[in-house]
Length: 174
Image (cartoon, rainbow, N blue to C red; front, side, top):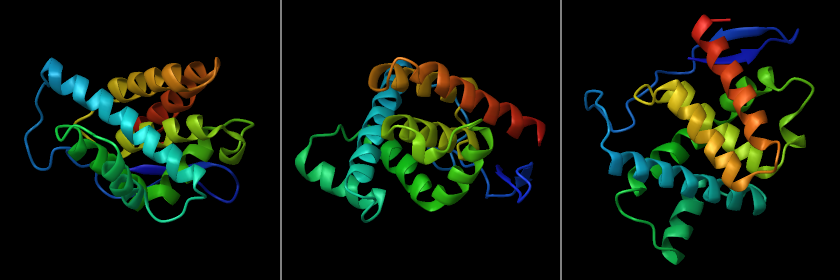
């Protein structure tokens, strides 16, 4: 379930499709340490691919950029399914994700954000809104870690504030 703003700038819940298990139809399970590391690194790859996509003027789809990237860079086959899942969900729901994020960007617009901050927020929102097997606190913490590694000095705090507000607003059905 995602959120968007109505014409008056008020938050209202909108059904944006079901959250899906990121591994398909498997039952939810606690991940082994190596699987958590693979997902963390997959998120970093997804961030880099999103950045490349934006730097190229948003040409094509994120899936196309992933294909180009895998042709020139070695990405572990264990990480590819999760990278693909994140990017395909982002491709499919970009307008909804951006609409939802706009509700929580107090005094900011998506266009004013750095490419890295925008990419981190979008990936965090994908996990919060569409991947039910990712605990919200994990999705937020992983986004903060990406912001620390790739963003500016204020990025981690900013990402935390926006994604935490999105999570709380979505959880309450605001």
